[in-house]
Length: 141
Image (cartoon, rainbow, N blue to C red):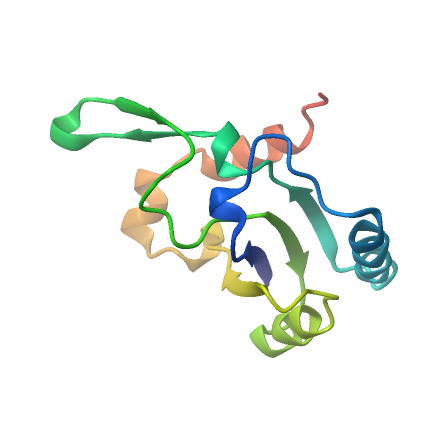
């Protein structure tokens, strides 16, 4: 089972462009990331720049509209994520509990939908999805 652990740091929604975590926070997080890797559960991870450097594309009336960050209505934003592969939801939660997060941070744990989770009609509508995922894994930056 794959799970995405979403880091949600309170206050990040109003962070200035270029805001970076402290070296100590990164060192602590790297130890945690290494533990995930050594356990063989880590599939992917990334940190995200603050929303002030981002954009949102909305589709009211079916037409795209771009809004540059920061986003006044944002209450919670993502600071980063991990994708892990574990045996259960409980195991994913246990990994999230081990994170060296600060008092202003929380981690949301969400199971990733996998192709086999879909009913037959959805699998038919998504024909080629698993091949697309496998091709994406082989793309080098």
